[in-house]
Amino acid sequence: MNDQPQQPTTGEPFTPARELAVWLRAVRSFFNTANHPLSEAERADINARNFKCETGIVHDALLRCLHLLSSVAQGEPQPGAKGEESGPESARAPHGASDDALGLASVKDSLGDLSDVLRDSCRLAEALLESPSVSFGGWAGLGSVLERELRRSEAVTLIVRAGSEADAARLQAPLVALAQGLAPDELSEDVLAVFQAFARLLCLLRFVEISLNGDGKLKRLLAVFTLINEETRALLDFIEGRALHSEGLEKTGRDILDGTAYAIRMEMRKAFEHELVGFCSVRQPPQIFAKAENACGLLRDCYRQSVVALAQSFDPSLDGEQLFDSFRTKLEQSLALRLDLWRLIKLVHGASSDGDAGAHAQFTEGLHAFYEGSLRHLMYKDWEPLERFIEEIESARAPGELSQTLHRFEAFLETLFGQVNMRAVLNEHSFDPNSIEE
Image 1: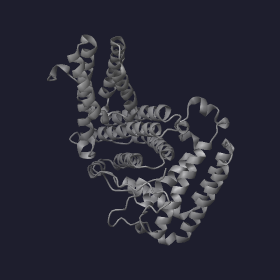
Image 2: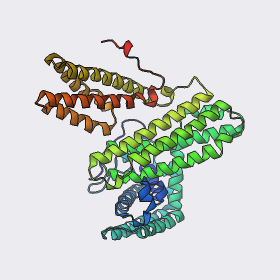
Image 3: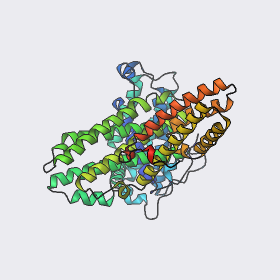
Image 4: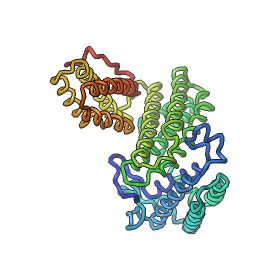
């Protein structure tokens, strides 16, 4: 499936150079198996693993880098030439956001050398892919060659540094002002570094979101997730090794940072030890999409909540709506979803208990209203089981068969309700069924 150019719905698009920086960093992180979402059994027997899927991902990512590099070398946004890949990340840059600002003209020879490196690495990957399996040694050898050449490249150093600085520069002004206003200087610098690290991570997750909204090769996003894993672990090391010990950090701030590190580790475990495990073995695009979307959502919400909590420990007047445009939207969606789920549970309970035509008609109407409305606020992974229940309910003929299905559906909805009720944005919005108007 070829990528199609698509403008992001919100925020500035990724210029070719900025997208190229993401892929170059992602490919390098991808060769470190510590960054991969492997099960304990897979990690214990890593030498016996077939790395053919991972090699294919690297091949696709390197091809993407070549297309982007061509655009960067010409100083133009990637237009999505016929017959070539063009990702949703490569929408035209806003006015004045030329890649020439990177000063790449000064390393023009290095750009040509980088093109040769990427092309040669693609050929090596293609040669490996001709075999039924790719050994760990073959995989690691490809990584060693690529890493050595990329480390030597002036162009790579410039592009990656500029991309990282551009992501950090997207840190919201209130957070910059807050951090710079702290004393002593050590605390100010450490808090600013933490906020900037979160800004870079959220940019990477935004990159994933844009890609999911496009029509590109979703499996190669695994390389971006390995980069997110690597960057997040570096942030945790910084928090626990330095920021927690900053001079001037009071107990409230220390407790928030300590809790932030714990929460991030928990969400990282969910994303990389559950949601993304087996990503390479999945073949169906909807399942790939579901895994990537769920992992992205878990981490995005966790990082945003962490930023808000840390900011509020220093300035209680700041709230999530000031920092993230969609923060309020997420809250409103979650409140509506929780309420609609509760009402649907009541309807299915009435239909399964009473068994009369009127109660069943009300339930059917409410079910279809939910399907057309709040369903879209659920995580993608929950759509399929809910749709299967709808099919079972609609195809049930005997009263006993329908009653059993409704009881199972009610239990499913109650579990779903509990999961939604645990969303971080609802922490300060407890649910009171007695306050609901019928």
